[in-house]
Image (cartoon, rainbow, N blue to C red):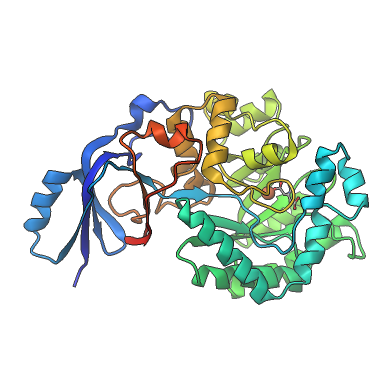
Length: 416
Ligand code: NIG
Ligand code: FE
């Protein structure tokens, strides 16, 4: 028998059904519903609307309906989506952080045994089970803060067997958390120090040996690479991405973090997203904004490194799609708190609350090429958060300190 649930009355419900995918959006267009209800059928949204009208509708249904009556003021928003994380890792890089704040350069930190390679060493030393456990623990922390979908990258293995270990750990973690984990292969994070060959030959080796297994074991349908002088140059990456596209992988790029070049690759290759963009100039901003590539701002990396923020305001004003993600990783972005970071980005970049919310919901879904979530409309997954407050402004005003009173995932209350 079909299972219905009716939740309400909700003081303000923001379904985001009318906001555009591209460009700036204003709070006036949030189109919120007051005294709302949300009707769930199995794991999807059946209807949203006036609570009293939905109540009438369900009594006429002649089906079993579970009524979830709310006693206090609540604001309902879609489940948040963190479209860029590196939460599959072992160890800590607290020493890097201290050295960076003491004024040491990237090179000095790397020479002292820090940087990405340090995490590669620590992650290679961990078992698949340990990594899986770490991912589940971190995913569950995010879930309590209302993040119901989490992208998770590999990229600390940097060899076919070690990347496989990471991606299998993520797949296993996905089976053991209520959050949806979307795995991305980031074998193109840097040239591993122990690889005997150049950048091109490493990427060729990865695409020949790892890509087919990703398909066979259904480990990931997304390929990412770090385009930067310290990692891979556009000329190395084009053949790698072309091969990935020919095998029907989605492409995402770490682009323009410290120097430009990556966003042009993202546009030329028709990537789903270009992430970072802190170094993008007017030309890159214009190019990204005109394309369908989602620009993913990563304020957590700016806060972790003490660098400037992604020019989110300019990208939106130029008509681009801006998602916001945490980049949670042990090196540049150890905080891992999406709502806090998104609101801080909003403060510095002058984003409307609607733009912040869009960035961590339906625009983040677009960054993951997911069309079944990110807005509260019929037939989408019933992933949503209830904040105990009487006005949505409070959620942003508290800069992450106000956390959801209830988190619902696929029609089930999973945290309260
Ligand atoms: O997204 N930019 C490159 N990669 C990560 C940092 C990874 C690390 O330092 O461990 C990032 O910021
Ligand atoms: Fe990253």
